[in-house]
Length: 161
Picture (cartoon, rainbow, N blue to C red):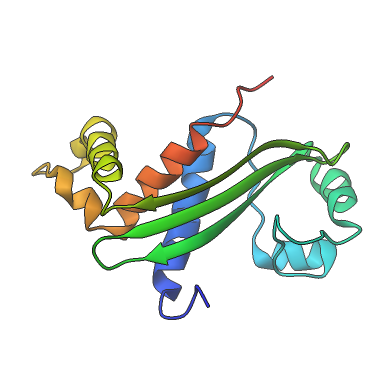
């Protein structure tokens, strides 16, 4: 199971995910935690690859006034060097139930192209927050690598209409 031994990292990535989604300004964001989801549809989680509960989209529209929902799943996680993270995300219209956008990406810090892109992300978007900028830090930190992977994935969202 993905969560085995990674509970703290998963919690951290969940927080980073919320922050990165809000940074896109692609849409108004309403984060739904497990307890809220359970109260709405009787489940603590949903998956873009499984059938949704019958009342899922109606509950989101009626209770939260959501026009769309972004389902995000961490599909791979390795925190030891070289780090690896995978994301599957799907943006679904709550009225038509059509997918507006979907992506399935895997990032391997051992791949020279991924490492170079992560280091460039660090240098251009994050290094001001650290005293001694070291672009290789992004390849050793689950927080920073997670920020890079989420920024990369979310940068492909369609523009707000």
